[in-house]
Length: 409
Ligand SMILES: [Fe+2]
Ligand SMILES: [Fe+2]
Image 1 (cartoon, rainbow, N blue to C red):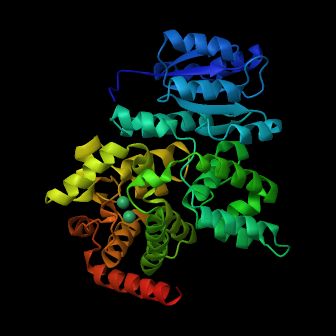
Image 2 (image 1 turned 90 degrees about the vertical axis):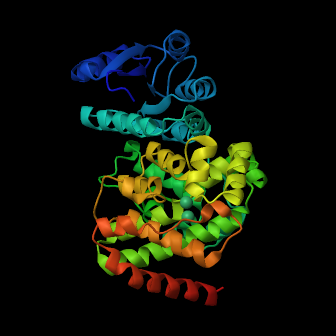
Image 3 (image 1 turned 45 degrees about the vertical axis):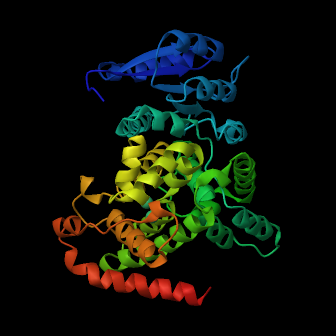
């Protein structure tokens, strides 16, 4: 994006005092942001009809049109605008209701640094994608397609009297869509967690069963409307690939570093690395077919075929979405760059390295019909970060993990 063009942020709140407070608090940001303020949802929509904005930060509880209605309208009419909720702690239930319409949640009172960081991260990640058509598609997604078998498994476990948080968390982490939703929520500033939460067991412990159940239900309702059969590949295949990549990435990471948080992130990034395929497979059907044709007929990598067909790839789309949801940066980067890791500015061993190798090895073993799963190992990148010598060991680790998986059915 042109650095001279300022992002335009619209703040919406029915309380004058809150808007005045924001104005005071953000005075220093005037050099970087264009800022406007609206006293109601109706006023905000009127403003948006005449002035293009990049971000809307809205209160939830407002007379007339409430925040949830406003953000749904914004989603419908201006899908490219980043939508952020800034609301009181007592509005938790309302926030859960609007989970699909907002990208990020912030709790009042919110300090300047947190607000600035959330808005800036959202803008920066959105700017990573130059292709307007992809951006529009991503912004319109309220939920990712979900795997019904896992959903039922979870409901069953929730009913059973001996279901522990750990057990629930483990089941959820197997579901790409559910994991993303739950991590989005826990990591949003609204919950005020002192640190990023990288696993769903931890999330289940922190959130409690009732909220988890609500999330499960809303995710289920959203997935009901998804035409996932149009995806052009079996979603169960992608699920298998993601789960096995996650386990391999974790084991690869452990051979180099024992940082528990980073090991978890390698696992989560592995689990989520191909969510972009679900998105483009189900939403950009024709263009996805075009990419598949290129792949069948030309000597071309899956990444380049997607780039050619719609100017972006599932890696960027997935990374972008997870970024908007506030997932930890290392997970976002690992997803964003998993097909071309040398584009990342980080030249050290990270969860990205582990996911890149894990996904490539798993796809190779699988020889899937889902052509776009395949991904060649980038040896130049490994050389550049000084890890090429580890490759044989990593391949062996993956092989062992995958064999064990096969044995356990
Ligand atoms: Fe991929
Ligand atoms: Fe993959």
